[in-house]
Length: 186
Image (tube, rainbow, N blue to C red; front, top):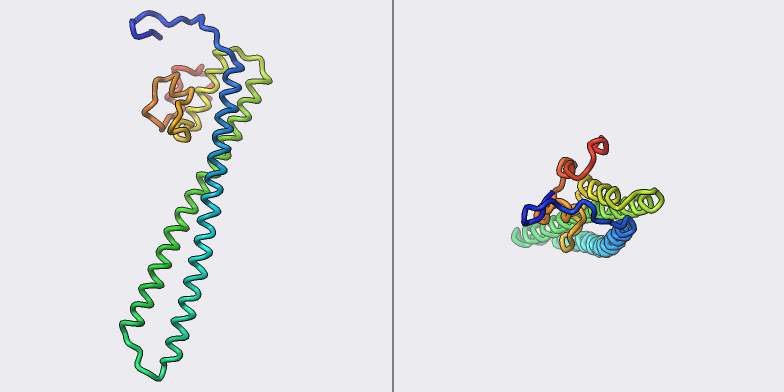
């Protein structure tokens, strides 16, 4: 590795493993906060879906009552078609919201899983006797394997800093090969 002047990087830089423990706990905390936000969004979508569902049911009942009341009278075709379009529009809106809800629930699960994994990594780094370089190597591998940069759009991860890869959020395990020992790739 070399700096901008082509000189060899100083391999004697002392990295504090505790800094990586703190980093992992901070990342976990940020993810927990994001999970709370997503949980609020999910709850709001569920409320909207319940309201829409009730609205559709009430409209269907009202339209059926209007049809029953006007059974003997001629029902204008335009009125029936308008009621059908209105109901179909509401149902389409519900389907869109259901799809959004499913996506948010999946994202919420992924965020919670990553937060838990960061906490586990912090605990492992803290309980094991690792030096700063090993701690950094493990964090970089962890973030590459779990595509952590995709969860921190406004914050640079250790993986991005170590690889100089701020633009790419789709990190893969092979991206970390230069930083991670080959026996850790298994």
